[in-house]
Image (tube, rainbow, N blue to C red):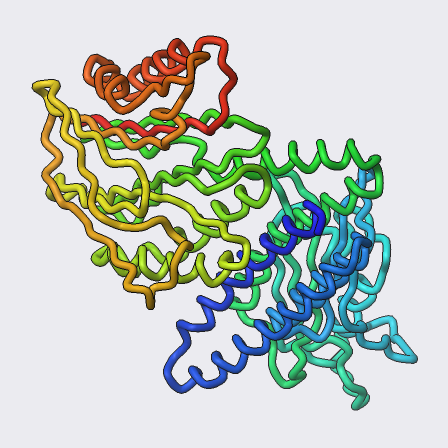
Length: 468
């Protein structure tokens, strides 16, 4: 299985995982149908995995993606357009057929027929019609309940070609890649909803990755493709990291990530749960390269989608995340260590939990250092039925106190003699570091680099510092 296949598959699984979570939140009456929908998607994914494993044609892979999107949003037809360098959208894949245009089209045509005329093209200029307008503006489009009447109000009894349509842009790092358009529900008596539109928008970023890789495969040789994929994955991984730390009058936060290779397995995030709570996360996925980047993306998706439900129960939060990652990565043997600080701005308390990660280093105003290491295994290694449990630790965040979260790429940095930077050197450097988080972060990394000297970096180095 090529890097291209693995990358695309994991990205799609991450997106559909979010959809399954959304389905699971339906009311009790809808629960049986939600379970049935979940089973259908899982069955489809198994077919998808088998077909991808035997298929090296990127165009065929894009058709599989179009089919998976159609299943996810229950669409009769899905069309994926890619934007080329000439600002023209070209049809890259399609699942299902578009409705037939009426045999006779009057000058005063219905909105439904006009939409179909706009969509039924393999080539669309930027800004032209619904698809071109979505690509140009970057705004989602949703229309449902379209009737069959012309503008003059006549009704000749013919069936309406389009009952419902939605289209969303595909982008990577704010660069427009193309458009996904879904036409008609499979049940023609229903229309697409805002929930369907949200799901399609969620899937769009992952489909965009596949679209870019298709273009890469068609334009470059084998070695160039591998390099391009790594560079693209690096940009995607960077996009997973927050651009800036949240601002606060009561504390300051700064984070740094230095990747050892093109793609880092380290990850950190700042998630505004609500006005009173901030979740700070740091993680380190096993392995290197694109598959490692993808498990961090799956972790990030789960955290951001579910954090509001778990802000009062971090133990359950980690247990559910563990089971989700185990279900998706057990066959690959992948896992991820993670630590999180839930900051309560109302009473200046912090709840700390970790899953196989390094401990939290607390530096008090007297410059002594405390190490907090609640129990908890790495995520994705074992199913919850094996007795997986996580502890948390709550403490008051007093003025003059600084917190350090880091990955083991910091403490395990080697020099030419094979000596690790180690925990003792880290504590000594942290003890004398600045009270300003940004300055302190750079001082710590300088100390690590000085220890390594000319010895090459073999692991990602990431740290998050919070000062009050």
